[in-house]
Length: 447
Image: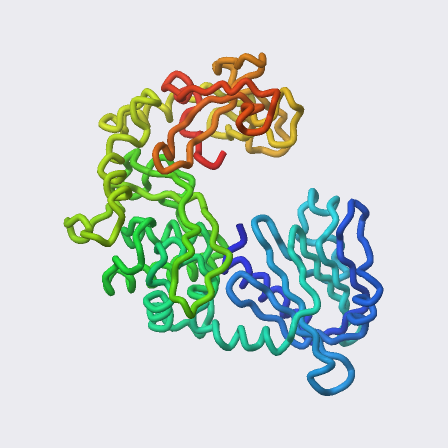
């Protein structure tokens, strides 16, 4: 997922093309090497000067100017990178410089050729990116003006404005929804949300209205720090709970995983949009639903509070053959008993993956491979799993529901009749220690 820091870095890359003129344009929409944009769009872009490029949250905007003066000659383009989008800016002299080999074989979402002073040429290429053109240049500038002070990665960031926006516009939202709302806190994505709430020791299901001013300011501070550390280093910080089974802070197997969010509350004058349920991780030990030891009164629903009371013993509980009271010994056992070993590079080089684009027989199965690109080591990691009534190996999945989030289970790879697949047998059983232990510490929830 491209979050605010990634989009901001892409915006910085694009500064080298500012002041240059578009010569050729392509939108990639097929499997061909590149596909010309519609004629009217190509005619509009040809000869335009890239006047400016800037980021607002997770969006990147390009402002083009024509040869004539006046606002009527301005055009804007919006790029949104979604889950897997990327952008590369390179000199035309460096063929595919910095572009991964596997991407060179794909069709880019956008390709722009620029020419500048002394005939210096620049190529912009975006993959897996939503491109919107044209959009209003005035509207994009107003968006930059209105949201820069709340952008997690902006030089103009103002913590007090974010705090006020959370209090006013996110009062009736869960803190998870409020942080992800791009008009309240632009640039915050799921990883930033999860890790910042962990560092602030706040349960992600809490309502903003239940948070004290001290807690809310602490959240804002950690979001800003995590975002800026990511921006300055080019890498996301250490993930204490995101995609983890063991908390990086308390080292307990107390990480809860659940799809939460999508609440449609908020002030009547504030438009809430784009809120969806997202997979969220938190540590039930480090992020309890309490304020200084007192259970919240009235601020959180009874169902959430009751669930929280059970979590200390329900995460990785006996349904998986692992007792939470022996979590550390279980962790040590899992780390030491991974059965895979690369003949050439040893056990430390082993990685665990899931077959995504495979045959029907092997779809969603998990396998071991070596982290070194030229190594051909491969071994199925599910040889000890039972088969379902269809005669296929059961697949290992993890629950994301409120009741059993974080629990692993084995199921038919073809689903069941209830899921709309007539061919599935509906096999289901909770995974036990005998299923999980051979995978060692390589097992992660978002596998």
